[in-house]
Image 1: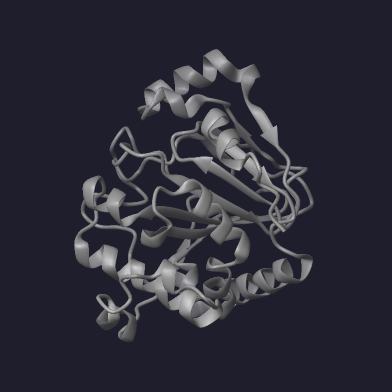
Image 2: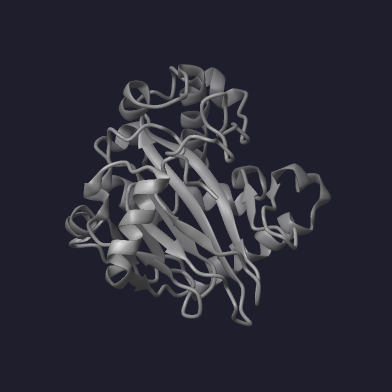
Length: 281
């Protein structure tokens, strides 16, 4: 169960917050099982990212099509609680990004200090949800409290912030089943995973239709297609949700021809953009 009495206050002040025991051990195991199946399937090869010297998989893209549990847990009670508290309109939620970070034992790649700003749309306070499938005691993410208030930073500016504030970064220890949410402008990093234990984290980013229409690199068809995924999942896995999907009829054609693999990328945004504002790894 989510205990988030001060979730929004903490998130707004520090730029990140931890929700303990958001997913049960049984739910975590279901997600782990489907993640391992996704990793073992050759048909997913194009969605495996490998930027490390050993060429092992460090990220899986587009998890909604990788197993029913990912779609089901997209609308988990803990996720619904978060979006209801942090979004400006819970009736217009869109899941804009989803991938699984894979940190293998002993040589899991480091994630260099960064903001999540590959999308060139920093007008609003966008939040990312990290669902931990393993304990992070051995390899936590370090966050710089209040750094989201600095606004969007270039890579050069990020490096300067890190050098001047090394001792102020806070290691956030999460257990399997915990959620760590952060503002995409919060400066953070993690070191190489040298431990004997893996660390998988499923990341979801959410925005509202209003935010996307006013400040994003995606067009209306993309917005509608991704909104349809949210509506479909709510209708399939939750009850009494009519108030959350007032646009169901309007988007019926997208729901009927549901596509669970709506590309994050286009000519404006990619995982390997050269822009100084792109910090995705």
